[in-house]
Image 1 (cartoon, rainbow, N blue to C red):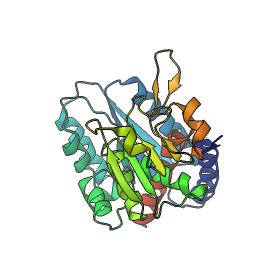
Image 2 (image 1 turned 90 degrees about the horizontal axis):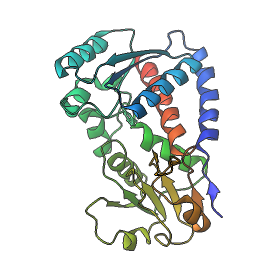
Image 3 (image 1 turned 180 degrees about the vertical axis):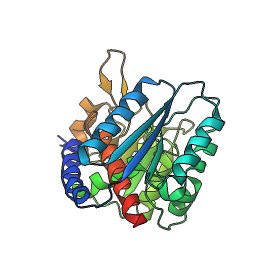
Length: 278
Ligand code: GUN
């Protein structure tokens, strides 16, 4: 039976350390979150971000827009936040309404306030092996979790399913920077299980049940980034936990694995950006 990679426990440990650090900061970090539209998951995520920030002593500001907000209006707000000395971190919650150009919006954020590390500046730094201001939250959280359990990526075969800018691509790059051998799979990959069977570390970030029984070799480390409600209404991930946890060496639960680590990383990034400004 696999060891559970307990994201909730590590988040609490990170929060305890962060609280002490923030208490000692003369000027507190300030996180501004832009939420456009009323995607139910996004509303929950943003409320959670605000709650965690406040618990830690980080100032937080949520700017809500209706789904029909114009791109120009959001861009104007980002400019205003960029120029506001009191704001140290800016996050635009994704997904954005369809009529808004995501890339234009994200790239309007000043790189030194880009708490998600998603601007072309920061992702370019990551992909060229230089240091971005901060690393994207979910990939950073995954690496912190691996480090906590002393799982070393170097020399391992890491298979990443999903090629999003938010998770798949940056986590693959971060594992590559840690000397893993990385294979990326996606919706057009043929014979997925032939590839997953060779993984020492498997990371699935798809949002659909794609990893089932007999798709992995014994003792694989399994990281499940997916989170959605299945047909029965239960919160579920990309991985069939019941069967896969019998042969994996380590596995993240859903909920309680990667999700809490994303928010822990967001709080870490918020503090890092504020410290950087000093
Ligand atoms: N939507 C889902 N996850 C994330 C995240 O980590 N950052 C942002 N900005 N939006 C998201």
